[in-house]
Image (cartoon, rainbow, N blue to C red):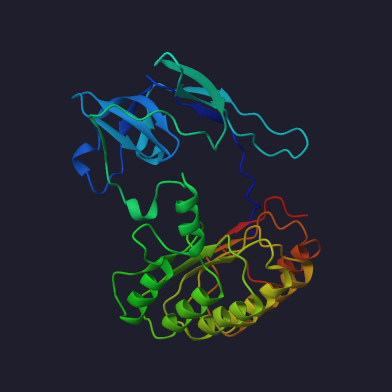
Length: 320
């Protein structure tokens, strides 16, 4: 078995208004890549930083498109009871009654700050996959219904492309707030049966019913293109064995994400058997198997180590 992955948080980068950053990784506005600017204000509704570039242009960018150049690194802290890294509190500015700004300390879900200056532009960087977070009951209701902001369903859009065998659609991503219920699972799985281009199905964070498990298992048995599967939530538990039975017959999957799926020792034994059968039948071993945060696996890990061919990368953090 490969060495267990034990990530350690060494420090926390502190971003604050005035910090110097460099723009990287933009696809829709590539001319901005490499430019340097300073942080203005964090927009918690859009989860973006306002940045004033050296040219004077102001844009809103995701944190993933910013490289800090002079930010401070604070020592990481962990929760004394769980040992998990604690989130860093960030200071977000909000308007006070005088028209200026008062500081307030918030963690991840901060309230929306004041509107940006009128000449602040927003770089439309893959907006469909990074929507504005819910700011009204109407928006929240749309998200829960599975509809996106133009009234369409993300799952139905993907289904249409899959049925058309669109070669540009290689990854179906339906993580929250996008919906993935039994109806969506049925449509997506039916479409995947005849699709030869899609390589990734990522729908983790949603409850997967027994019927949906069976539908996904059917796809796993027939697909020749899917290479990565990430599906279900912490309620998956023993029902994952249905997927593992299909995994034994699959020859295309190389990456399986099962983090925080409520797997039990029995499910882990089923997984070990499936991987062993794959190996015996000459099917490729998994390149990546993520099992972290499944605290009920127990003795299943020992069985996995004894019977299953070792994947190239194995994640087992926080498994009892």
